[in-house]
Length: 189
Image (cartoon, rainbow, N blue to C red; front, side, top):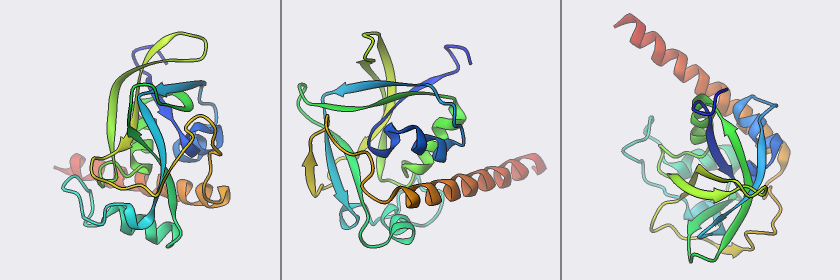
């Protein structure tokens, strides 16, 4: 992969772990660097705080809350990163992704379904001191959180890892199938 081909993605919460990123992308050999992003805080959002409206950008008539309820149940909760004062920080990992792998992460994070929004062009330093420009996702405006947590000292998984694996691998398969269907439709037009 050349420097131009890669997207530097800041993963936090479960996405800071190699296992989670492999389950989402199918790539067990991703290259990652520990990092912190400044100007953001980390919170926890419960299922009832996740948007229940269907987004205009959604590929199906379903809300992010409904998708998460069907996959995780009523006790679902997730880390969310949100804009804050310039001195706050969140720890995570910067992963080198292809465009395809980034799309798989976007799908996992329900960005087009209206839960998160893309954040691009943020400058941060990897722990070796090199400044890089990253992409990630942050909570959309006007969403509530249940609680704020220490963005530098937190356990990456809030739910059982076995559930993350099961759901991430299934979602990746469903995403790939949707892409095949779209490609067939385009091919036959």
